[in-house]
Length: 420
Image (tube, rainbow, N blue to C red; front, side):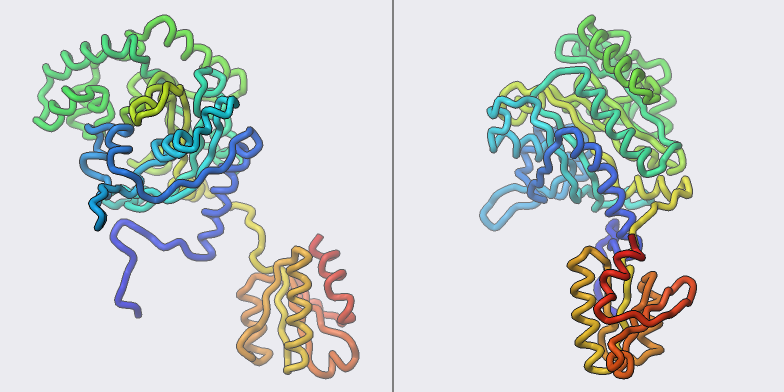
């Protein structure tokens, strides 16, 4: 037994469960790749200020959850707690917005880190797949991303998720709402930290999950009642486009989400089978983020979907993914000559796209066949000296138990034909 364990709030992803996570990532990415989104990968850590400016000084992510550290050279860095700020920083640094082809459409997949109280569905190290469309203000772009996320989830077989939708207004109408909300919040029985948050960013208080706070917010003013005509028209078009695509959603006038950079469209994917950690993903429009981190005005929109929580949602619905077999053919050699011949055939099968494995370590027939069963292979190839002297191997169907001799030179063609 090793003396080391995975750090608290983290987990190891091991086979066979890891196959589910890979399948989820692939399913979320598939509609993005088919819609003009190119893959981007950013470092696992960034300058602390990138997240402080972009995500927000008053957010729990920055004040409580971010893993920040100082390097030997004196740089202040942080493990990335979310993906959008990093992706936008990379796009600006590479001048992707100057190529003349806006929006810049990017997708990513990776690990993120937040110091949180560990519980089911909430980890200190977690995995997301995200998408960002940078440099265009268009309701159709907001609708596209929501539709693509819905498409990804349905392709996995999920059906019991809900899409919550709201508008957070813009720099024209939100200040008026902000003042009205602050006045309302000052009249409540709130602790000092929450009142301080209300002074910095009152919308964050609406996102407070504590029952004693939520109970007092029942009569809070709603942002939808303060939207300017432009934001109202924009939001109506997003709703119409989503509806026309056959995607169901619920209007949630109190939906805020926990990051300061959101403007106008904001949305969340929730699954009621996950208990308190019901959000499986979400996102929205962030038209001012580029300027916050020192770039030009680049209206943008994006989302991130949690791989970990999506897997939990699949389990909650009892959905079994149709995963490809890790091994289709398992070779069992009996003797040195058989090892040489069958190893060559396994290599040839792999080159032809057939998943094949081999009984390593000089196991006897009984032990090697146990390995073949554990591998999940549909077929086993067994050969000893007598078989090879006759120019054949024994091909065994591991499901039916049927076994017959085939020529050594027929192995690849026969298995390709049987496996389709």
